[in-house]
Amino acid sequence: MPLQTKVPAHVKERYERLAALREISLSMLFEELIDELDPHVAGPQEETALEMTA
Image 1 (cartoon, rainbow, N blue to C red):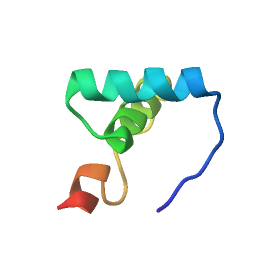
Image 2 (image 1 turned 90 degrees about the horizontal axis):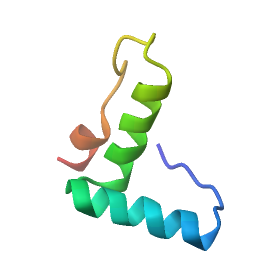
Image 3 (image 1 turned 30 degrees about the vertical axis):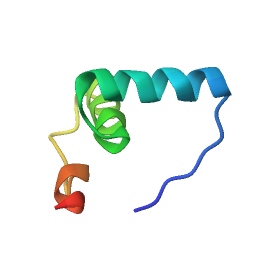
């Protein structure tokens, strides 16, 4: 599902740099962030970002 938001340029640059360093997509980075911030949810209920790109 598409997700759109506006962020300051410096935040976008950091986000893209971190994803590149970890060699993951921006979608996977976002998913990891959500998993870390909300650990009480027991994993994805639908397709993960990785499955959507397959």
